[in-house]
Length: 513
Image (spheres, rainbow, N blue to C red):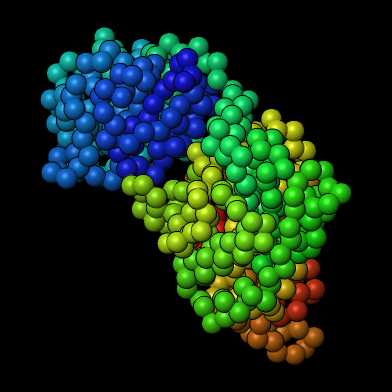
């Protein structure tokens, strides 16, 4: 157990692990636990602080998640966020009602800089609101420390009891000074030292994997992407030659990517791994024939992945564990736990009901993309591999709207290669969180060489994000977009139109399906 720790109690919000991630950014170890955790367990853990998450419920509803008022008497600092703030007010005698005006999105909040939460924050700051209910009246012994024109209690505190609450979400990047607020909580209120680092995560995880696996055999699902690559190297350091990495080329990879992955991880590559490449392109195309619905495609790809791994495991003999590079945004979007299902990821919600392995190991399950990259650097993985563009497990299957065919795969591969090449030439590739080309299911009339065409439209996507939970569309230079467009319509057969996606996340997801 870490010497100092902050725990997050999950009341069903989408951002529960994002809160933990922000606390870890402050170099304080943090874990997420369900709101059903017992008060005895919390006492045993002896955290330096507790954070209540947001959630979709109303605190006054009979079936809403609650916690015993006893938690406020532990003497442990508590910060309530959104639903968590309302719960604190409700349990301690305040009034929570349906707001006359709901607040969503970026909102200017006036704060009291005498509060330890806001001492390093501007008098007026932009925060991310997302609430229908509000605290109409704070408990008698609380002081209001922030407000908006329509939210009389945007923040409140009982400094003597070290109880703090904010109606907005300091953990999301849209709250401009949210990190300062969380830092104020963990350092000024909780009095943490800040002695946790990513190398602690790597060391602890390697030790835990070693203990779990023992002398068992491990099969790793290696796609060559950032997440699975970091998972593979982590496992290799933990169990060595007990690990076999199976790379399934499902025909839905980026252009030339199958050969690139084999060059890096295969025989003669940088890592001493047992490496198996399975060329299963036709197998996947056959399974996907005629399928257009996104969730069905994801689940078909996910199940076929597992079946291929099971077949390879039988060839290897007596494989006990399957390793996957699942990261936290995959878990949240797949709706595991209390969160709503957004889309199934092939290595989370896309798994079939029956999997022929003793256990699935997901060592990166609680990390975000940037934390995975930090872990990769700690493991000694070269920078050019760690900072590769993210790529979804189902591959181009979720970047092709509608039915997947070999011809459509070729179109999106060629368009994406052109796009990535021009972004790199322009020197802006390191500035973007993610960028790629997708093939829409739209065909339109065009004219090329004085002749009528009726071909597909490519959609270009580029976003700025640090955590992949939220994102904003990147404002790419027009000359770059113009050059990419010209090349795609001239060089990619079957495409006569190029579009640029200006939608953020939310309301969209980063991938198209």
